[in-house]
Amino acid sequence: MWSYKVLLMSMLVHVTFCITENPVSIRSKDLQHHQLITSSTLRWLSAEKGKHPDKAVIGSILIEADNSSKQQPSDEMDNNKQLTVPRKVYICRARYNSILVPGQLRFSSTKCEISMHGRTYYYERYEVLENIENGARLTWVRWDKYSGLPVGAVSAGETYIARRKASNESTLGLEHFLGKLEMEGITGKITVLDNERVPQEFTDGEVLIETEPVRYELTNIKFNYHKKMEKNDVQTLGSAVMVNEEDFTANSDTVITYNSTYSIYWGQGKGILIGLPTTIRQQDGSVLEEIKWGITEKEDRKEHIYKVEIKLDPGTGTNVTLLGNLTETEIPYTARLVAVYPDDATRGRTIQGIRHEIALKDVRTVFSPLYFTGNNSFVPTTTTTTTTTTTTTTTTTEKSKDIPKRTEKESEVKKEENQTTDLMNDQGSNAGSKKKEVHSHSSDGVNLQFDKYLFYIVPFFLSLRICY
Image (cartoon, rainbow, N blue to C red):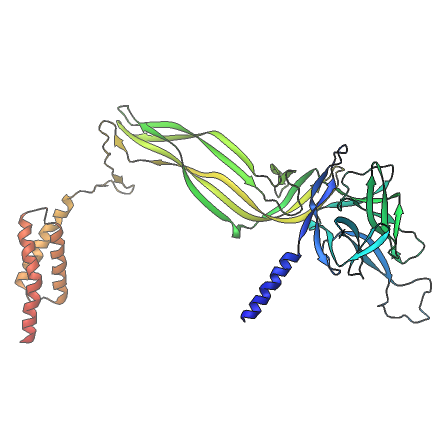
């Protein structure tokens, strides 16, 4: 069992080190300095022996004869038609010495094929161009030696990804020959591999470019409230003293000002440009908020005014404190992200993220007990019910009302010694009650002492009666 775990861990480590990714650079709008910027939606993913990711970028189509189809009867065979099957050809790159060169990965091949110095080279280990979450808008634009390098051209290292349309002499073979564009000053040349994998050079062809969106729209938002997480931190926002200096009951009011901060973050996601203007729309299409994608939006909300009002009796006052919950909320969501391009074209896809919000919520007041402004002593509180006119006031005189009843019970015990066990328990409980009120009357102390001894004497006499 132990050896099995070691083998499994070694396999995981091997996979971890084999699967690597590298960023993709594209030509920026700065045509003067030929600067490259990193794409947010493309990447180079390492692979080997014919493998490729699901979202690998297709560079061409290889038309092959379908030899797996069942042979048709000779009387139904159309000699002018041949059964074919299209095969995808992916864009790959491999390292020749220290130079990264783009090439092709055919369906039936386990190697990335590149051309260098007029020769063809094959590599079992290579990198495949991947369109992350299909977020990139890729197109092939025409190029010749007089047109210059287009904006958004996808770089494979020192050269750019290019192709040239194949001749239509045969229905089988590649639709486009894949290869590279080498720029030499303001001109350049395209080198591709033909159907026989022989390098061919041209001064015209097509270059792969990525068009970046100018803004996003987030629509059809659905929150997963079952996985919502919330954390509250109570904050003291301010305080005030409220008094009634009049000689009649009156309303006292004041205002408390406070500041707060608000932040919102909708996450980043894969294959999404950071900092792009984004419109968040509600289910009815109305605008919820405007943000910059992938950046935490913070807002300082100052000079909030909170009005406080309370009715006070003459010469009384209270201290009021304003509290609030600094609430941090995280809630997962699913939504549709729509990318809008300079030509007003759109591309939408479903994304998942976590909305993170920090806001001040549940602002409330807390009042101290009422006090007299003259000596700062607390105002006695009374509770008046709405159903009766009596006012319940807690005093110590109520306890003395039970004393005559307890004395009457003591006389009953002296007269009747043959009471049941329930009566003795009742006597014991009354004796315990008298011990609590020994401080009220000095005369009760003697009765309580007698009751204490009586509690032990009565069971003794009863036991004697039982024995005899």
